[in-house]
Image (cartoon, rainbow, N blue to C red; front, top):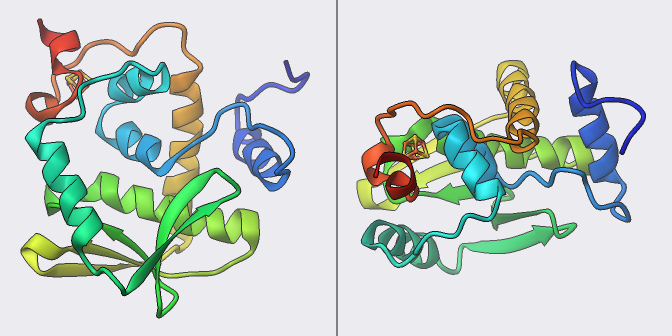
Length: 188
Ligand code: SF4
């Protein structure tokens, strides 16, 4: 256990230091999906972080995966960086995130901003992003500015706080519960 705690403003600085050291396993490995879950529901994030396994064969997930895998084929390449994050890069150099629908716009945006933040903070690579909804023929440019950087860092603090809890966050009805993987655990 570290002698310096994870609380307070130093959390993000310590997270950056650990991510820059590729020989050390980070205490909390934050993926883009975890950032999404943090924005949607911290209880969902906690279940996910504990490896609570849910059947992934539901139609919504299959549809989302199919759209993600078949859209913009040939125009983007997937990268796994440091074994930490996986992202898609367009030939133009923009980072692209493809979603089935814009219904969960804020979580999708946070996920993409986290990738841009990671590239900038950990690898000193500045990139812009594009959020794409092929089924809706919509594309939105996403940039890492001061406000979005603060949003990402606040969310990193939130993710770490949530996954280090011994108990899941309190049950609270969310607009997303009906389509959530964990609804049977929460509401049976
Ligand atoms: S069912 Fe609702 S409360 Fe439970 S994890 Fe999902 S979104 Fe959160």
